[in-house]
Image (spheres, rainbow, N blue to C red):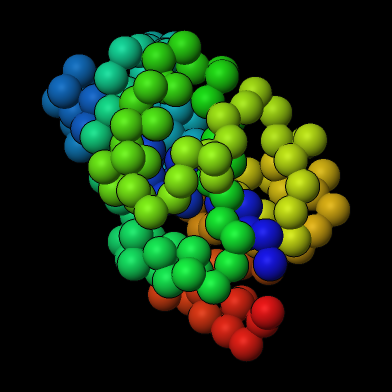
Amino acid sequence: MRILIDMDDVMADAVERFFEWYERDFGIRYTKADIPGKHFYQIVPEAHRQIVRSYPHQKGFFKNLPVIQDAKEVIEALNNLHEIYVVSAAMEFKYSFTDKYEWLDEHFPFIHWKHRIFCGNKHLVKGDVLIDDHDFNLSFFPGRPIVFTAPHNLHYTEYERMNGWLEANKFFEGLP
């Protein structure tokens, strides 16, 4: 089975980086419980929204992101049974490509460079399963779309939902 896995907020915790940088810039610390069903920029004061939206465009935003809990162990186990590809829309943010590549080398060295797809648009990438946190990637996917729970997608109801990596067994156990 060919399983396509998104990086940001599926393998790497980008939401946490928004919180870190916002605290650095404004002295206020938010948590995921503060943003159910929203993107972080939607809940900060209007005067701060452009700054928050600029974070991913800044050098270092994607460097050393925390790994989503249990992602490494579960994805490595899946990689031993299935054809795993990491698919990340890394072209939107000028500095993200190198940081994401190095992050995969450090945290997921078992994913060969030939199984890393950095693109601007995921519509051309094909597989059996796509695990992603955004509707705009899942909605076009002709295979089995699985939404990975993140604060901004709690209202999605049209996809199978994976709330964490320990739930992967219920999606892939016993499948070829």
